[in-house]
Length: 392
Image 1 (cartoon, rainbow, N blue to C red):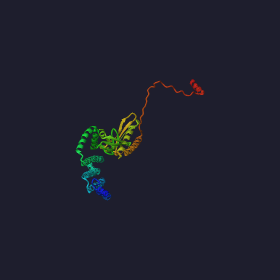
Image 2 (cartoon, rainbow, N blue to C red):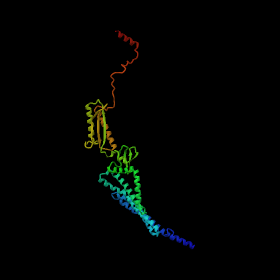
Image 3 (cartoon, rainbow, N blue to C red):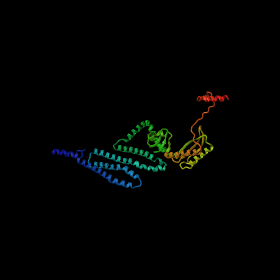
Image 4 (tube, one colour):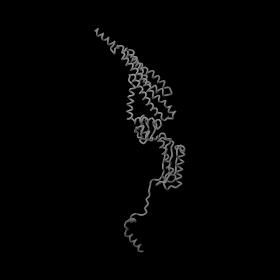
């Protein structure tokens, strides 16, 4: 038993990488103490700070606190690993690995914090877009630069962690550069789409929630990405279009129009007199110019209400005007009310609307005169009376 107990002491004193089990347990205890402190920090300190930030007028501090909460809690894990490693006299090789691990975790925590803060700090772009007159592009620019910033920070963080583990980052980047040159020839469309996405922001072609029309699709912009733009059609189907295609075609942005047009050709019967036509034109003109639903300023919109042409079966009156509202539903209501008023004016003038018709004129029948239709045979009494009349 004395020999067995001696073996137990040897294992206890140097059974784990030459370190005693008691020292390893002490290191684990220190690590779990930091985990407990992490729990207390989350429950009391973070909760108190959240209560303070909610009372402020701005929401940026709330967003930043929510972004850094995870990294702050992870700091206790990193410090716990470092303290646990210092508490036990590990061999030099183990200490070297622990040192690299701790340095890697520190770099990870730093870049993770910056990565998480990119999105809340992106709201500072709102002031910048106001300076350059791009208020309508706030959401789109914020999303674009948020993705770009996160990508750059993730790459820098990966490089910093790889350097801690003695990777030759320069050689790796050089190899990636050569590989990138080879890939670039096969990724010309990708590169062109990336530049096209940048020019969409630069030229303010459209932004999120705009209604646009292209030769390919018509609908509402849902997302502007690095490579593609997603458009929701009016039948709720989602269409994804490469950015290069959008910058190379005509794009109509309906959301940026200042007014909405009504363009009608009103056909009046040819039987209408000159006075009736004038009454119709004047009646529609008075209604449009005296209604606040329509834009009457000639510097902002053109209004034309005139006798336009003599059509095949009607005298056409042009009605060309613009409404102040650009909302589709409101525009439809204004348009419907105008239609009722035009009908009232036309009927009040004593005439009506023409409809397509044609007249056929025959100068000569092609087969001579038609035969008389044979009526019913006359009774004998009527025949005798007709014969007597003929004799006289």
